[in-house]
Amino acid sequence: MKLLGKHLDKDGSGYVTLRPDDDEDIWHLYNLIQEGDRVRASAVRRVQNVSATGSIESHRVRLNLTLAVARVTWSPSTAAAGEAASFSTDASTSTSAPAHAATLHISGRVTSENPHVKMGAFHTLDVEVNRDVRIEKDEGGWDSIALGRVEESCVPGRGAEVAAIVCGEGTATFCLLSQHMTMVMHRLEVSIPRKIAANSGAHEKGLTRFYSALFTSFLRHIPYSSPTIRAIVIASPGWVRDAVFDYIMAEATRTGNKALLSTRNKFIKVHVTSPHVHSLVEVLKSPEIASQLKETKFAREGIMLDKFFKMLGADEMRAWYGPVHVALAADRGAIGTLLISDDLFRASDPIMRKKYVQLVEDARQKNAEVLIFSSMHESGQQLNQLSGIAAILTFPLDVEVVEAEEREAKEEEERRKQAEENGEDVNAG
Image 1 (cartoon, rainbow, N blue to C red):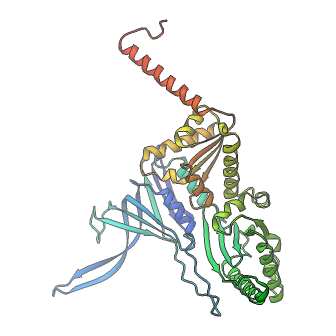
Image 2 (image 1 turned 90 degrees about the vertical axis):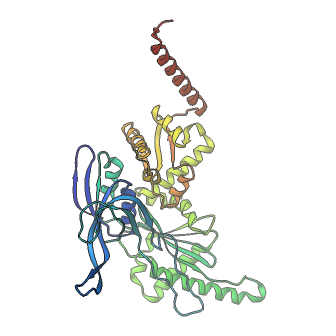
Image 3 (image 1 turned 180 degrees about the vertical axis):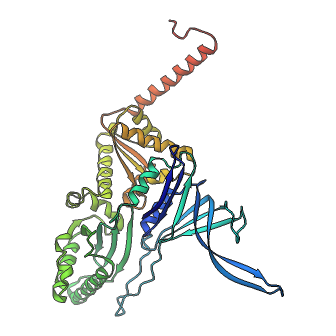
């Protein structure tokens, strides 16, 4: 993402102008733009002109529109959505459907004069990569979460940090993991006959077809020589990962692919229980990955989510989840690590967003670690199943005891107010 311009006032109002470079930047914009903001971007509209003779001429013009945002819709790319192409083992080449880039659809009413569009007219802007967008917010709109996302998205050199092949016998899913997204680049499925004594040759031929198709897909969809790729993970149940790695290295040697051979030390083989994309959560918390990617955001999230689930089973008084309970823990300064989904900050209710922003800021002021999970990662989706917010406490708290204390405090406050209204001495007795 490129930051083209910014003007912010002390009250949190102002504007930021950004230019998205890739699908992940479109995702950042989706998390930045809220209902009630004003967004300015280019659009193409069909305009009709009536000549003196009464003939109608129609043509398309590009113009800039400013909308008061009423709705924001995210359309992920086919890769991010996991709508990968199929691979045909009956043909000599793969048959791939064209990938579609992510887009952001912003709907609202026009708020600035334009010669082609009436004020107040309802329109939709389609924000795509390499198209500038200006986001203007009112007082308090540019809170710490929004500003943090702008800063993070504009860090140079971002990109996919981990490539992964999650495979089983005859199946493989090729993924790229960046800080905020898991993109399924390709799915491969090759039918392999069962291995029986009478027909072992067919089984071996099926495996050979599978490995050959997998190697071709690997070269096409995994940017193995990219300097941003820190690890190439081959994950599978059983022995498949070893066979896949051996085949890739053997083919690289046979074909003289020096670039691929030079990346040998990037490969990590990991055991998972299932040959499906959701197994990436297991991958990211494995010791082999954790030690190599300990500085990356998504690996840290996977490790801490796993720690939370383990604590929930072994020491539940230090593992709290849900907005109400986490807020109670925060009031007592008990939070050591706060796990919160970016879904909660996209709430259409600005009061709810402000509540979660304040919770994050309070936790940070008390030296708690705050991890904002992306719902475009498997770990974020798992956290969403727990209401989107959880906390690992620094000391144990009994939920029932805390709730009882809260009720007593509330009742005492109500009695105090009642006594004051009746003119009684609240300190008597």
